[in-house]
Amino acid sequence: MDACAVIAAEETIWLLADALWHFEHRAVVSAGAGALCLSLDPALSLGVELNLITDVHTYTTRRSRAHAARLMRAQLPPPSPTELLCDGLSSSPRADAPERAAWSDWIGPRLSPKGILGEGLMAAGAWQCVAACQGIMSGEFAAATVSLVGSNQQAIGARFVRADSGISHLSAGA
Image 1 (cartoon, one colour):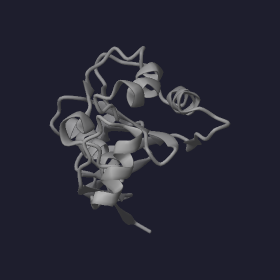
Image 2: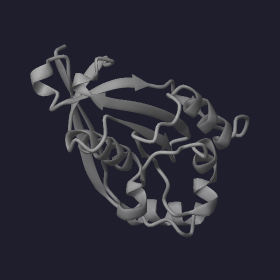
Image 3: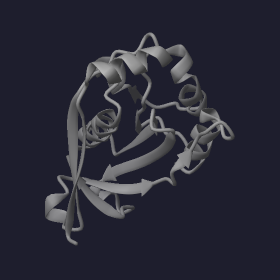
């Protein structure tokens, strides 16, 4: 295929919000959607390319969320003061601790969309990717990293770069 639309959506229902509240009292559940168009055609890239996607690292009763977050982090480039980190922190000390620890060495700017928009579950992952691409499209950053240590018992990361950087694999258009 030449292009692929990646869409993440979440509809909030009271049952889901109530269930999440039992695990995390500070969680503010939100709904919405986000999308990216991944294309091999540079004309569709909007100046942003997907450079890297980590392996999926699951966490269970046998493998901690912190361990999965560390494994994901280890597959991404070292910190750079000029690269944006779009993390999944949501202002919840307990829930954020594993991801915060995995990125404790980050020296560049950070953006935490969930802290502003709420816990959108899979939609929040799309929001993070769109924010990363927007940071590059604006010219403010040459690269942006996305960290997803989500409620789906998985940790996964991605890195987007400016299309003219010469280190890309796939194009992304937000």
